[in-house]
Image (cartoon, rainbow, N blue to C red):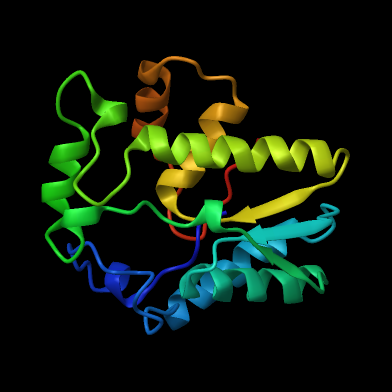
Length: 185
């Protein structure tokens, strides 16, 4: 599940914000409502565990979901954090979008001080492989950010080629999550 709406999305601010350094980027009222609505659809689904990114917007999302689903403990994992955009932090989103989608090296494009999509894929693969070993047979809700969720979904669907991942990224309904949306695997 992707976190709910923040003021940045509500106001369509097209700036890459410093999410880790700004605890004031919280869910809006609409964001809370979208998370509540999504969590309600999971009631009765037998969710056993919740894992979440530690960023404020995902923590709030996890807390709302946990309350609705009756889960007492939220597990926070560093591997679920959002992409580190390095030199693109604080700059217009179009700058980073153009950088990541340019050329044949799409998955290895890495801004100074930041991460590539390959870096994120490796960290979420490690996370998912660990979950598979430790929690077989458990239903787990993972709360994160758009790029990590998109890459996790592709990995779990068995994608091997970057073209498959990129095609899924373009599928805004089933593979690249909207705010507060669940991606089922």
